[in-house]
Image 1 (cartoon, helix red, strand yellow):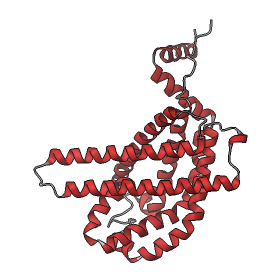
Image 2 (cartoon, rainbow, N blue to C red):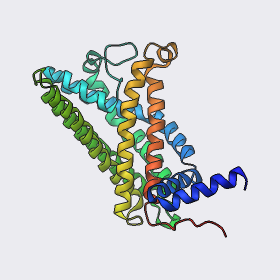
Image 3 (spheres, rainbow, N blue to C red):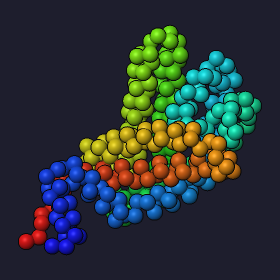
Image 4 (cartoon, rainbow, N blue to C red):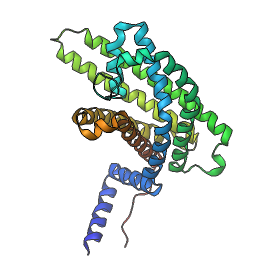
Length: 294
């Protein structure tokens, strides 16, 4: 028996003995078969072009809130660091709160107008990729008008979910900031609770996005399974991106590209997470256990 046959037999045996391993393998195979990385790259390209107006609206809103409630600046900063780590700060190639407050009205106004087009275009591209992952039949795919309408609904839902996540994170950050220094255990619990709430909110977003694409073609239980995995991977991405930013902020390459480099990498890996979570949901239904050839 060759080395390839030996490895193949070992993998098949492992898949037969573990449903989890079998599911992971099936999801990875489906992701590769549907060219999930290529779909993520396409979504990243359009997302990178269209995400700036969305951020302009978001940062404009944050700037208005910070201008009206100056005492909330530190809480907003901590909340933003959990969603987009490293984007806001006083360091080089970062957006300061003074800048956000000074350009708040213009950013919010321009962002609101442009986001209706560019943001919907990005969501539409994301939905196209998900329809390929979920193998939605052509006759069940919406037309152009219906597709853009659903993309607009998904965009609004995304905005509401992000606002909910931001508000919850700001609330927990406020509670943590007002605790005495000796309550380190409580602070750690609040930090863990913040991550857990963020994952829960992300799960709702992933499920809503998947349900808008699949309608009733995929069981809700399977979609929740993929949504939970996507939320966990998304939280890991946020934590890793913060640490990566801290370790590379003084590197010449980072200083040359700054925020654009962060956004490009962040959107790409976020898109890959969405596609793999969808592959996990698609393969969450019962699949035949592989059998070895006789």
